[in-house]
Amino acid sequence: MQSVNKIIYKIGYLFLGSLLISITAFSQENSPFSRFGLGDLTNTQHILNKGMGGVSIAYSDPQIINFSNPASFANARIVTYDFGVTIDSRVLRSKSPVSKFNSTNFSPSYIGISAPISSKHQFGMALGFKPVTRISYNVIRSERLPGIDSVQSLFEGSGGMNEIFFGVGKKWKGFSVGVTTGYHFGKKENTTKRALVNDSIVYYKANYSTTTFFRGAYVTGGLQYEILLNDTAAMRREKKAANNFYHLRLGATAALGHTLKAEQTNFKETFDYDYAGGIYTLDSIDKGSTIKGDIKIPTTYSFGFIIQKTTVDPSGIYDKWAFGADFITAKWSDYRYFNQQDATVNSWQFKMGGQWTPNAKNTKNYFSRVTYRAGFNVGKDYINADGKELKTYGVSLGLGLPVRATRFSYQYSTVHTSIEFGKRGSAANIITENYFKLSVGLCLSDVWFIKRKYD
Figure 1 (cartoon, rainbow, N blue to C red):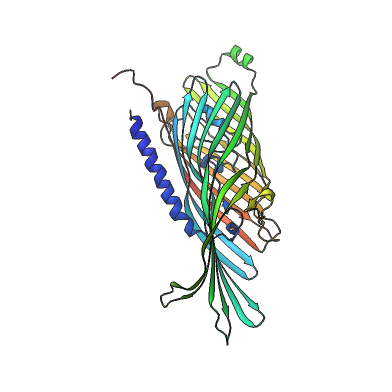
Figure 2: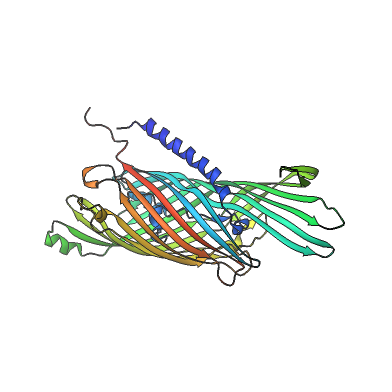
C-alpha cells in the first residue's frame, strides 16, 4: 500500500510535466482561426467521451473523471487518476489565393484525480488541470497599394487559456448535483510585421506587438437524474442469478459567464533583418505601454441523455451498452475583449454516440472485454472569421482497452483511445480546415487511502 505522501508527490510531478508539455507543444500548430476570440477551443472531454462523438453530459462512470458534468463526481468509488494526450493533424485550404497547408500538434488533453469523500453518502470530488484554448498561427499576406509596388504582412500569434479546477458531487437516490470551481489563466500574443516594397523609395519595416495576460475564477454547475426502466418487483420474483438493468439518465450543466482580469502591453518599432535572418530594432515608437481591462466570457448551457444497460450478478456490475445525445450552446455574441467586440457569434453543437462491450466477464477472450465506441457531431463554431460563420462536422471511433481482468484485482486500469475526423467551414468560407485527432489516455484506479486491517 502506497503512502499518501508518495501518491501526492507522483501526482505533483505528473502535473508539472503536463504543464511543461503544454508550453512547448502549442508552437507546432498553425490555425488562422485562433487569431479571434481566445483562440481555438480545445476538446477538454475525457477520451472515453470523445470516442462517443463527445456525448458526456448525462454520462457517469465511477472509473473515469467526467470533466463535462460535476454531478458525475458523486459516483466516485475508488481513487482514480486520469491522464490524456492528443496528436492533432490539420489541413488548411484557401480559395483565394488557392493554397494548402499542413500542421501537426502534440499536447496534453487533461490530467486529473477523483476520489470518494464518503462512499456511504455518495459524495465525491475531483481536481485537475486542462488546456481550454490554443492560439497558434503564422499567416503571410501580400497586397498592392497605389504608389507602392506591394505590401507584405506577417501575422503571428501564440498563447491560449488553461484551467485548474476542483469540483464536488453529491447523490440522493437517483438525483445528483455537482459544482466545479477553478481558475482560468493564460496569455494572448499577437504580432504584425509589415514591409512596404517600392522601386524608388526605401521604407522601414514595422513591427506591432500586443501581449495580454489574463486570469479569473469561474463556476460550473451540473445535474443528473437517473431513472430505472425495469420492473424491479418482477425481477425480485424471478430470482435470477444475473439481472439486466436499463437506465435512462438525464443531465444538464451551466458554465456561468465570468470576467477575466487582463493586462495588455503594446509594443511598436521599426526593424530590419540581419544577414543571419535575425531581427534588430531601428527605432522604438512605443516601448511597451500597459493598459488594464476585462475579458467577458459568456455562459454555456448543455443538455443530454443516456440510455444504458448493465448486468448485475454475484461477481460484480458490468456495463453492456450505452447510447445518448447532447446539445450545447453558448452566446458568444456577448464576448468582449477590453470592451470591444470580436469576430465571434453564438455557437451550438449536437452530439450523438454510444458504446458496446461484448462480454466484460469473459477472461478467456480479451477482445470480448474491450469496449467499442462510435459517434458524430455537427454544429457551428464560435469564431466567425470571414463573416459567413463556420459550420462544423465530425465523426469518431474509440476503444476502451482493459489492462487486467477486474474480477481478480482491485485495480481497474484502462487505456482509452479515440480517433476523430472532422471539418470546420464549408464551401461558403474562404478558408476551411480538415482535422484528424488521435487521443490516448490512461485511467488508473485503485483502492488507495484505505487503512490496513492486518500488518
